Image 1: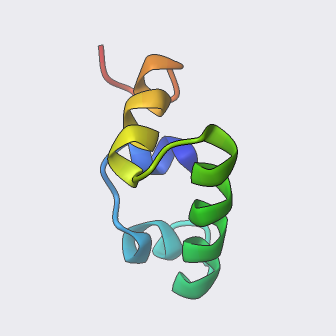
Image 2: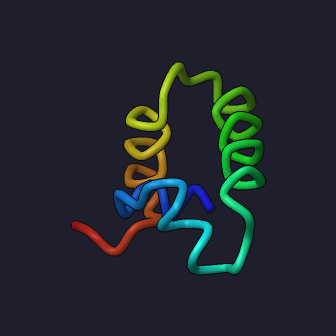
Length: 57
């Protein structure tokens, strides 16, 4: 899920891919951001990119 955030997908976009409810994605993202210690999904996306979870350079 973090990789999908790193690709710039919204909660609705993430929910459409693995067939999850958007509310579940919100809950998962809150948990992920808390565990990463980041205040928002932009920082989470940066971490995903830096960890090589996205297809970018």
